[in-house]
Image (tube, rainbow, N blue to C red; front, side, top):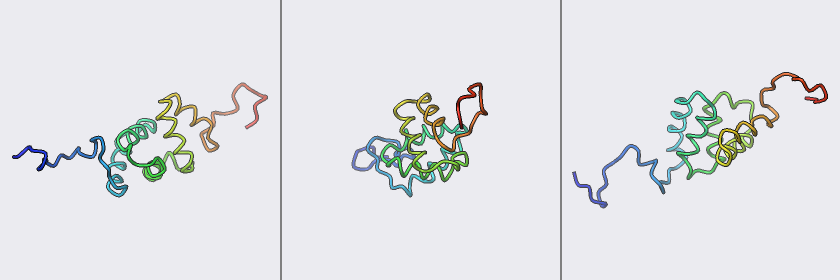
Length: 117
């Protein structure tokens, strides 16, 4: 096999290389597989964001929302916010933004009787 740059071998992981520009339709099956492979919401969103940096977050948010039922209660803007939090603040940023969303799961009244929900 010729390994010169003029005739590169077809590598199934070429889509991970820097500078690869995939169309959203090409990325959709990969995003679906990644969402299915990671049961943890943070991990799934992190890996999708890390492996599809060339796509706008709005597109990624729509795709992840389509394949993750645990995001049904959130708007696309909420999911974009979660992705931004992952990118900028890691797990702690993700958790902080998740707690502030209107549709986030509530943890009961708690011990703060003066806090209204």
